[in-house]
Amino acid sequence: MAVEPLPIVRLRHWGRWLSAGIIVGLLALVLVTLTRAQIDWASVPDFVVYRVMLVGLVNTVLLAVIAQAVAIVLGIVIALMRRSANPVSRWFAGGYIWLFRGLPVLLQILIWYNLALVIPQISIPLPFGGYLVDEPTNVLVSAFTAALLGLALNESAYMAEIVRAGLNSVDSGQVEAAKSIGMGPAMTLRRVVLPQAMRVIIPPTGNDFVDMLKGTSIASVIGVTELLHAANNISSHNLLVMETLFAAAVWYMVVVTIASVGQHYLERTFGGSERSAAAQAGRALRAIPLMRSARV
Image 1 (cartoon, rainbow, N blue to C red):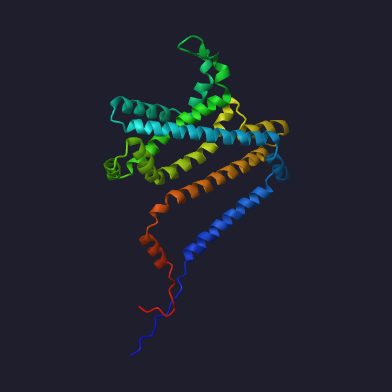
Image 2 (image 1 turned 120 degrees about the vertical axis):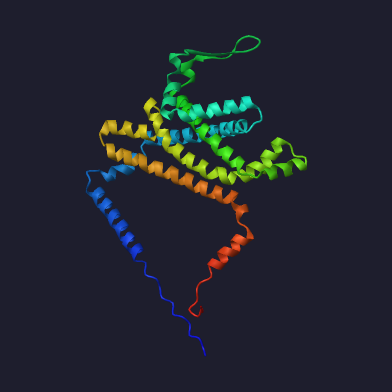
């Protein structure tokens, strides 16, 4: 006796339709509220391209990129010291992380900015006479430098823990195998451990860089002309506070979007080795459509 194929009945996801309707309704409510608000939307594009706003954009990106680069270098060094067999190195690395991760970043920036109150002159003597550096502290530690030091040192403590977690994720057998073929510690780290650890390190590092781009707004407290400070400068002349803040928000979203796209491609690059043949076969099987002639 022939077996009739079972009819395929499409599931009705009422919960999805209900949640979608609620979301669309809330978005419509927000849009209506913004359109009725007393905001001069036509002036926002003009503020986006103001010269002081573009200067703030450049300073924001420079501050974030340099601070993150310094933090990555310091974080790698501190993470290696944390894993060192030397107890003094381990204690120093642990104290470094405890100190700079424990203090608020704004407090660190203010300490660096007011360093001249306790150290008026910075002098580094040379062995055979003269000075490598002999300048007033206010000259060497400007507002931009103070913000850079505060952001970079604070972030380096977090980067040290991120790098340490990535290094710990690599199986110890990989290191032993590298030693067995004559690789030294530096080459093992560079060619075996770090490439495998990067798939663990990159996602939180990318998130931290996005947070760094937004965290540069703290530098406005000490007068660094970044995006938020630039918006405040503009609004102090024309009193259009919300319009200038929205203009700064546009640039924040642009740079954060670019950073997020870069993070996505970095994760794809370093995660390529994880795409095994079995995983590809599994995705191919899941992609096979259910035909109407399918039988149970």
